[in-house]
Image (cartoon, rainbow, N blue to C red):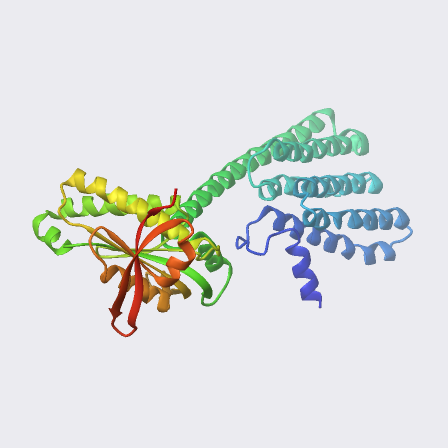
Length: 407
């Protein structure tokens, strides 16, 4: 029970998907809890020495402990900046009032210098707010120290010793401020480097996986496997690719494939398809996964026509004699992430097999689709029936040629 309450306090106002331990909000929650614990430890001592102003001191401890409880509450409501100001303000207030209530130099005000070093950790970047909090600690520290030197104990020190003592205090406060500035600057640089590294990592992950799947992979432990009642898959394949391998140099072949597949990538993004993978000279994309929509067949048809047109331009650009076969299938699929090393997002199911067969049993520069794709897209596109095609393992399948969009 206690562990659960402590965990709730420490992580109050922090998103569940946050993995970083060095989190300004988390640090402010921890500090508020630690200060309350230290304050409450003083209660038995105050009660034992009650005749030394115990009433004032208990009031001071209880009131400031209650104010520190506002820190996680404000963080929970999204007011993180206000929570930090409350933390700093209440801490300074307690130290200042303690010094004036006790009316004796017990070096309590030196805790303010600890606050100077803590400020860079509760603010994630160097901001005006951070410097205001740092300087507030320093100014109150110097005021209290000066009060002790010239008001509380003036009879024990000569004027020379008073000046030297206060000068030493000023230099100490200045040194702490400079050290805090250095810590703050290093913290900011570290945060920037971590942010850039995370952005690069996310960019690499998004080049491998769809955005929703990448997000789930980062947040959820275990395997990712989804079933989709309806989706459409498009397969593209270069005809006579082996001839290109024999006739082109290595860098020429890579440049060609990079140009071809880059255009396929742009068109898939434009038409709302998700690129699944490339296999040699083959390309696979899908609509309706991982984001479900009812227009997946229409999207695939639009994409296939756009790819066909783009490849015609590439044929002229590179003087290619090779052609392109395109196949589309629709139906139920299973999607998931497989592998531990070089993992990938892939699709399985009869619809995937049919789409692959539509491509392999198709013709050059033609788009062959299944009956299910035809039924879902016939209200927007022209089709010509091809008849039945014998597919290994599936028997006779009725297929259609996609001709163009209905104007």
